Amino acid sequence: MSTSRTLITGASSGIGRALAQRFAAAGHSLILVARRQAALEALAEELRQTHRIEVLVIAQDLAEAGAAARLMEQINATGLEVDTLVNNAGLGYNGAFAESSLEQIQSMLQVDMVALTELCHLCLAPMKKRGHGRILNVASVAALLPCPQFAVYAACKAYVLSLSESLRYELRDQHISVTTLCPGATATEFHDVAGNEGTLITRLMDSPEMVAEVAYRAMLRGRGAVISGWINKPLPFFLQWMPRSWAMGLAGRAARRQAA
Ligand SMILES: NC(=O)c1ccc[n+]([C@@H]2O[C@H](COP(=O)([O-])OP(=O)(O)OC[C@H]3O[C@@H](n4cnc5c(N)ncnc54)[C@H](OP(=O)(O)O)[C@@H]3O)[C@@H](O)[C@H]2O)c1
Image (tube, rainbow, N blue to C red):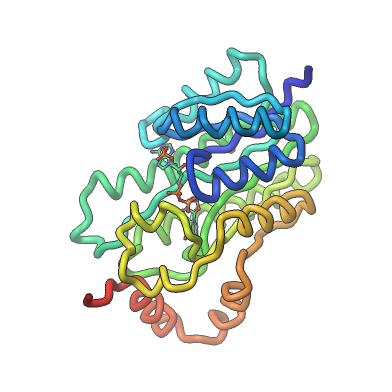
């Protein structure tokens, strides 16, 4: 039995769940991570039955300091190897920076940046030793510009995009690909957690399955960064020409809750 696994964080819902289904359909055996164990176990059972793959479930809160190291210790103890790392777990909160709680800010920094960075670092050494590997990091179109009301989230996602592009360059001759997915608004629980009800963001959303398909194909082709959704693709072109203050104003307006 092969010991190679695809590790997917944030697989209990949304894009992570759809990615798990896409990887499983392609025959990848998986390690699924999130806090909600029951949701992960139910998905794991469905994937084992449907696709005849091996699935290991690990419940882990990635907002805790040292979570990535603890997760990798558990994986190493099983003798399994991560040949593909999908850093998908993430969250954002809609609100002005000054009115956000420190707890909200810390959980975004920890899950969206710290855990992702530490997992890349912990998985890369064995990937380099084996001479191959793949990393898929989930950023957002929010990585492309500062977003008032989502200041910390957008800054975290800009970090993810920047980090991933640098890693991709550093690893270009080592048979390790690093792909960054930048989804636009996608119909997932993200918007319930963020408190996005009544905003323009939630008016036109992509399906998590479509986003996962775009991400999976981009990763297989070894692409650098990919934006999912036809409505989001021209964004970099417009942002190139639009004054930054206008773009920020539009982003802030899209995130503002409309009066009922
Ligand atoms: N939906 C969008 O519009 C959108 C747009 C651009 C980018 N994204 C990005 O896409 C990724 C997936 O989000 P989604 O839209 O699929 O949202 P989602 O349905 O809320 O899924 C988020 C996943 O992250 C996990 N997660 C959150 N906090 C965690 C923690 N402390 N420890 C471990 N796991 C944690 C959640 O699992 P548990 O709750 O079980 O822990 C869940 O599986 C995120 O990185 C998000 O920033 C989403």
